[in-house]
Length: 388
Ligand code: HEM
Image (tube, rainbow, N blue to C red):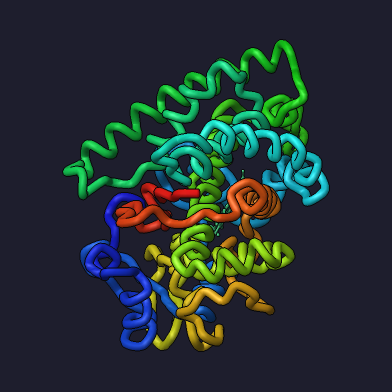
């Protein structure tokens, strides 16, 4: 399964960019026997796999709770369900959250500011999105730590470096899945009796074709919002900050010209895309990049590679802080385009603006050990030690 067996090339490449470059030129649509799937690397092909749902289906069989949710549905069913939560994610609805997100960012930085070992991931970009989504869903404050723990384990890839096996990882994720499902079921029950102003309450009163959502459907939504939104946003902040700080002139320029912030975030999304790959399943035989893919095969669209494709982007292998236009596909393409994109962008903007305001002299800690997360889907740092 792609979620737990990373492509060998990914693991072996010193940096995925090197592997991607090689694959784009030598085997842009490549069958991997070991994983029994097709890897797709060029921008145009990746875009087609993500958007052309008539051939590339998002539906997969599986027992994970996210399989009950919109990310695994095809149109037309997909839209009926997606629109239930879409209202909570319009740019307008999201902008209304700005003051609260600013407050959370300020609090986290205040706590972190005096630590001698300030870790931008652990102390800032990791807790921020979890708190935000917990509040949106309606998770009470006092449950935050538990919630953070579960949401962490649920998305965690195999930690090969730490000696973890695929079986151990699977087991840990299953346990956390069950605990979190029971926890959500409890919240759902409480909101059914006592509705509040949160997303679980909204979903409880929603209907599709005149039918209320079932408990598995409600759980599917809650899980998806957690899984899709947390680590990705952590890494949007972490990866963009790494790109800025590893070339200090970039950070200094942003501090002087904060109006570049939006462009810098888009470039962070392109240059080190938080979600590197998404999968689909062929509904029929299809030809892609000169390769015939049979029906019923898993296809991996490497977003991380598409966004570094020099057939699409000038100076594709450089972080260009003021790149414009920047037609990256870090949030996907087509009907499944990331629902949380306005929220992720807002959190990224608020987080980095808070760092500009409060820590303008920020730099990477000397000799910082910048280990990346081992996951074929998520791209980001385990930690980002900084000094101010
Ligand atoms: C879908 C990336 C943040 C919720 C997607 C997809 C991508 C993506 C690539 C498309 C999946 C596909 O085509 O199969 C990202 C990145 C993020 C981010 C890079 C941060 C930088 C968030 C946040 C939320 C969220 C904050 C919500 C709290 C979703 C949902 C979907 C989705 C619900 C499924 C949409 C659908 O199937 O219609 N995301 N995401 N994402 N994302 Fe995000």
